Image: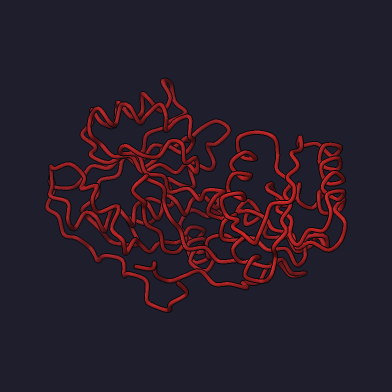
Length: 351
């Protein structure tokens, strides 16, 4: 699906008289542990409104970390007439907000990467481990890897990473061994040594941050190609660790995000968190949908599952019937100076 085709253009300004705008809620944490991430999403969403020049969307931000949490924020957003909710960020908050939104028949486009919260009017924009691992493993198989091993952390993310790896492999490729570790130096070392004893491997998935991956790599015997996850994309200095050079991982393309960073810095005087792109893309999607969204009517959910999908900062994406965003990812190889793209992201989805 590596066809070269232009991304679908963003809509131009939509002239709307006062009182006929679409009310859209953005629910993110603005204080507490995730407040800075939520602020990046909120700022990027507002920047998208400015960049598109639209006058058809009235965006109001609600704080999911305020008293009453995401449930109170969703109830207030619906009481104030919002017909679409962007957010929340965290899966637990989506679980609190979703029932309230469903009763009001208001769809939710959340920023979570937890597939278990998607469906029945809830769509998730977050990049899931299954997508990044599937893309990275497929590339490794195309380069001759057949015998896979894995190091996964204990907990939900590790479980999903392990499931993603298993579902990505088909004969003659096989999963030789998978070791689970506690996120301590001793735990990582023990798991790596156990994997070393399982025979020849062509590739090893390390389903954790680049910091943990570097620790694991230092204890793995030389030979297998290392494969990372989308978590590695957050480390712009990843190439400074010689142990990770040559490793592959899949992530959204960075070119448009770098452009967003420049515009964001010019307006807000700082660099956004990487997840800020989700706020920007959610608004781009909403602006485009507004052209077929009669004022005062429910949001047309059918537009979200169009096969052609949408173009955003993080490349092209489209929602599957289960509410999970399908994304076109690129594969990068870690180098001494950072990373290089070894397999570009698709620019259109197959029919």
